[in-house]
Length: 313
Ligand SMILES: [Mg+2]
Image (cartoon, rainbow, N blue to C red; front, side):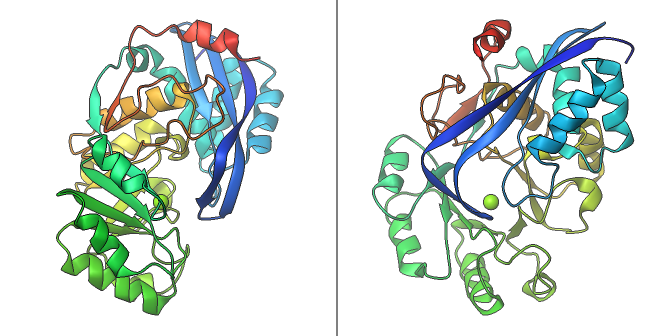
């Protein structure tokens, strides 16, 4: 990459209601949108760290961008030199690099519906046509409440504990997942780095918070890939070429720029399966979601990204 320049904008997005994450309840998240212009044209990327994942922070990313003083090739070499410490920036630069293909992406991927056990979430998602539901569980969750959801539809269920269980409870839920064909997997039952993973076994256990980039992972089972946290996408795709175990592509509540790029990246995987991108409509209206919501996650081609960029104050 020679020359070129870039600009960035920081945006704060407030959730309509606080969101439970692996690092506690979150009211708002900050994102940085990146626009670059180089010999290959204009590209966009998004820096979208997520609570509980050990990437660089927004402030650290901004510090790196400020030091590059708008010089795109300078930014690329800085990030390349320390990409293991800057996975969000590395992913954002991958998005910039492939932007012409990303902007043209108009494919469609089946998407899991994100539901809370309280209220009518599950019924509403089922009525909307979701075939897979992703349910957050905790140590207090009862198996009967999951069986009630089974009775509402004929699809699959994914359970996500966000690292909240102890080993005894995790074993109980792992046994439940393994005995129920309709449970696709149990996601992050134990905290990050918990030694209990060794005895829990890998069958139907998916790592989310414990997986950031391929470089830091030795888990042979299912992993959840959040494209915007996963570091350099060329390295990610090379890793997928020789690791044929299924993975799950998932959102980290990015704006339209990050979503378009992440869906494009997921679509390149021959075994993409059902993605976890039911994250639209969760923020106070800020016009930064532009994709259609629902059980099929679609790319938006022919979208005016330059106008989207200009509208961000
Ligand atoms: Mg998760």
